[in-house]
Length: 174
Image 1: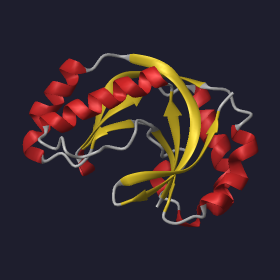
Image 2 (image 1 turned 60 degrees about the horizontal axis):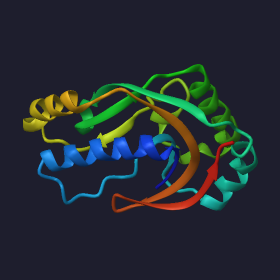
Image 3 (image 1 turned 45 degrees about the vertical axis):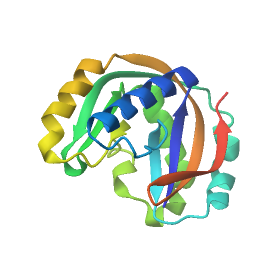
C-alpha cells in the first residue's frame, strides 16, 4: 500500500509524536512504533511511487506551506482510533482537491475515504484501541491535549509494509 501524506514542521511533529507515544504507553502498547505524525491525503492499494512522483513533483514544489491548527480530539469507532483533528480550512481543502485532480486518472485502486468530499483530515495518535480501554484512554488524551498550531511543510509518499512506513520520496512546500 502507498500513501500520500502531509508532514509537519519539527515543533508540531514533536508534540504530536509525544502525545501518540504517551497513549501507546498508557494502553500497554508502548513497544509499538507508531507512524510519524502526518495527515493522510490519499492511499493506494498498489501504485508505482515513481509514477506518482512524476505526476505531482512540479505541482507540489510550487505550493506554499499550509498553516495547520489542531484544536480538538476525535475518535473513529470502527478502528478504535484516537486522533488530533485539524481545523479544516479553505486552503487545506483546496490543496487536497487540486492534488486529487493531478492524480485522479491513477485512482483505480484508491481507497475511497480519501476522495474529495469524503476525506476526514486527521492525525492518528493511536489505532486499534480495545473497547474496554476507550473511556480511560480518551480521558487521558483529553486531559493531556492542548491545541497546537504549526505548518504542513512537505508531501511524502510512503509504502506501508507490516505497519511500518518506508519513505519513497519527499517534496518540500515553499
